[in-house]
Amino acid sequence: MKIRKRFMVIGGIVLLVVLAGFGAFAAWGPGGWSGCGPSFGPWGRGFHHGPFSRGDMHEFVLWKLDGKMEELKLTPIQKAKYGELRTSINGHFSAAKEERKRLREVFRAEMAKETPDVASLTKTMKKKIQDVSGIMQSDLDLIAAFYGSLDNAQKQKVVSGIREKMAGKGPCGEEQQ
Image 1 (cartoon, rainbow, N blue to C red):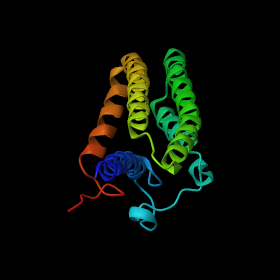
Image 2: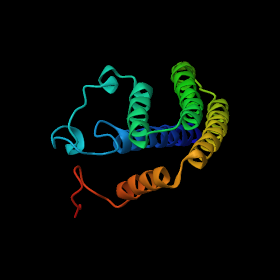
Image 3: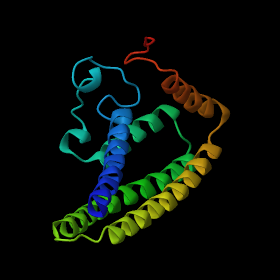
């Protein structure tokens, strides 16, 4: 009975991680932030032919961010702040991709054993969650510094874009039922 419970705990953790990844993909996936475009494809958002189509999620995210920054018409100081943020995000995405591969292999190797060490796997997962939390906190500090460098008109554009996304708008601005 203990082994079955361990498998259920590990399965639950893996399911939680997969669902979190799926949620991130659904939020910022092929339809992007604006959501405008044809209403075919997954979730009625259409298909992009940009960097995401090659499977490089971090390139897609940075591509979308770059497009949003062009709309803000940044000053040289603001561009430097954004460059620092972009470099940090790019480095974290690249490192995370390699780390995911490594963790997947460790997980598969352990689960292939006759009696897997579930305690060790959960300890590894907890450490990974703490590491990711620390990385996210440092990136949030960079985001706050970048946002602080924006003028009032630029801040208003950013805030209105966020509010629009939070309002539950459909693909091209129409209200969802």
